[in-house]
Length: 241
Image (cartoon, rainbow, N blue to C red; front, side, top):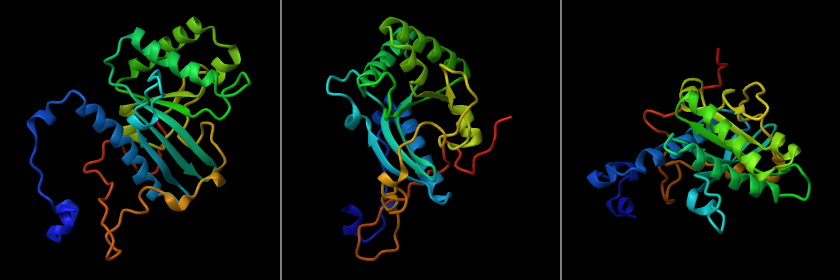
């Protein structure tokens, strides 16, 4: 509204830094979560048949009892289907016990998702970690959670939890094969390979990134999602060595 009143683009508005906000402990976390989703938006614009149709912030996707509080929810549509996921951006500040209790919440939610013993249709859980050694800690926390809850073997093996290091995502791209399924230790997968819902359930015309334009007169302009410089690479996926 301020930009419209001034007759300028929203990106041309001046910004006065707030020292209190810069010192916020949540700033790095918020930037990391937003950077991941923005990188998916940028990547979708560079690949035919790809789009991010859904991006929900933390406050919209937590469970009623706040037992599960994802840092975001996304739905990435690609030629083979629609990958739905909860995102956890892990900065390595939680203890092993706290991390295990968090994963217990996801396991309980997955166990009650369907009547069967496998979480059919349950969104993938993507965890971005800061360092490679943190992947091992997430794996240990998951095994502890599975043991405490006495989760059925079929659910434990099929639980769609995937972990990737931020350094790998930064180097190889958000669509590169960087995601590890910790319980099976299979080869690393790209975001296009985890369980996906049928693509035709969603309208690709409603993608984020398709509406960021200044070309349409008499309509409210939208800010471009491009970040400078981007936190995560968005070039075509490359294979890690």
